[in-house]
Image 1 (cartoon, rainbow, N blue to C red):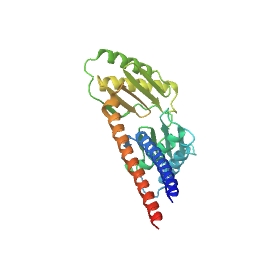
Image 2: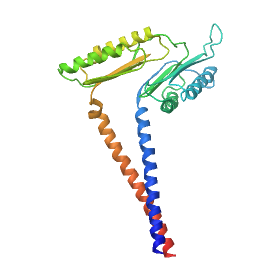
Image 3: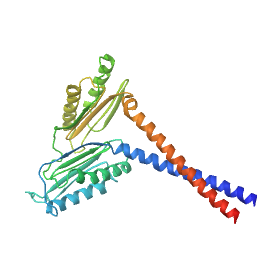
Image 4: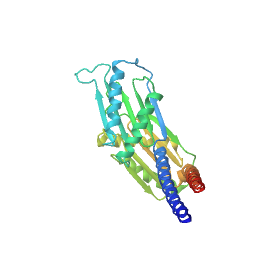
Length: 286
């Protein structure tokens, strides 16, 4: 009888460990996805279409194509209802793009999340764009694909870095490198890090023009900021002081999330052990 209980206890411990590992992996993966899906901005047109209209049918087709394509590629664009030389007012154009360092599996999840949000944030609008940390989804009833547009849609400037001469030098070097990009680029120079990206349907020349405009806005609008983001309609550029996000936001958030994950996993694993042990005791009593 004692040997049976010992054997059952060993099996219980193994099951609890497996449960712990599986739960931990699920929760940490969820944390990664939450980081990738942080909301940045949304832009909605004033004009709205009627429910069940031809435009809505075309829009649903475009959004469905975007969702399906994201598991195969980190960028794609679609057009529905533009088959004639003079497309109807119901023609719909759309695209999505994920950050250049994303795998297609991560891209697909991010885009699906963005598509799910865009109709809630911009209901029945003829044009909308929604930017998450890891991806962009945009549609319009006019053909904007491949056409340069340097309209500022979002900007964010952090606190000032005072008079740190070394920081300014490194920042300007980082921005000069980002300005020369023609697709996705990441750079780290000493105290400063940054990355930039254009929508993939832009030519190299138009991408450079867009990023030049974005970098100019970073300098002129945000000045001595320790971190700054500027999103134009078809490109964006960001920079930050090394450790800025870790010290101000991410490290504290990740510490809190890590503690929460540990507590949840510990409680669930402990609960599983108690349940199984009670079951064994009942069997022993019988």
